[in-house]
Length: 126
Figure 1 (cartoon, rainbow, N blue to C red):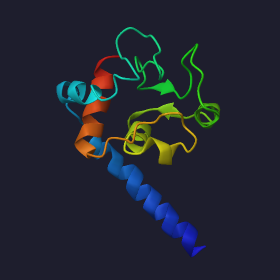
Figure 2 (figure 1 turned 120 degrees about the vertical axis):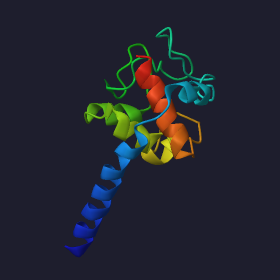
Figure 3 (figure 1 turned 30 degrees about the vertical axis):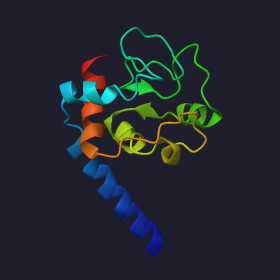
Figure 4 (figure 1 turned 45 degrees about the horizontal axis):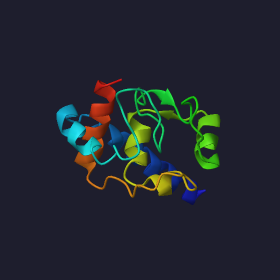
């Protein structure tokens, strides 16, 4: 019982801390997005090695047509996950830890300001 209470308290602390990273700089995020361009695009709506990120903020996970997602990512989508600010903030620092079994090879964005900025860029360019 105590473990559940501690876990709930920690989870709440993490969730309530997320909005602090939501206010990024879209112009700075465009520069950070350069790291993503090898596998993703955010302009044409065309899939590359990874799915298009055009309109990703607010989109259901694993929902881009004509893209073959990993079973792990498809399961997140089937469970109803949406790529909102909180989810992206949790995912981008370590994609493989957030979705074990993902096909995404990128190690993650390790600076919180890079995470916030790239999310701001993606949100500003739906």
